Image (cartoon, rainbow, N blue to C red):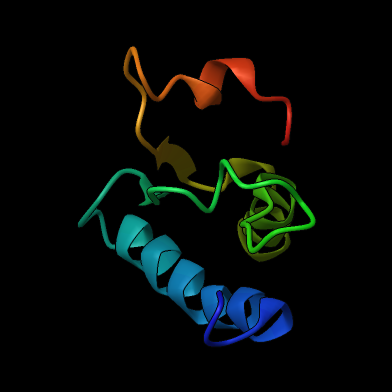
Amino acid sequence: MKVLGEEKFYESLEPLFRFYEERVSQQDIKHYGMATWTALLADPNEINISLEKVIELALSIAGQNHHFHFIQLPYNIKQNQANTKKNQ
C-alpha cells in the first residue's frame, strides 16, 4: 500500500480477486484470503488495509457468493490487537 498508494492498491486487488474467483469456478481452490503483519491492525489514519473496502471489492466482483473468506494476521499473547483494537 505504501508504494502504490491507497487507490492503486485497491485497484490492483480487483484483477487478483477475479483471478481467484475464476480459480474457484475451475474448482482449483475453494476459498481465498489475505495475510498481513500490520496493515489490518493499523489505524485508519495510518497506512492500513480497510477490511470493509476489501469485502466491498469481493462483493462487487462475485456478489454475496464471493469466496474471500480468510484473513491472517499475528495473534498471540503479546500481539492481541486483532481482539482488542477497534479499528475495522
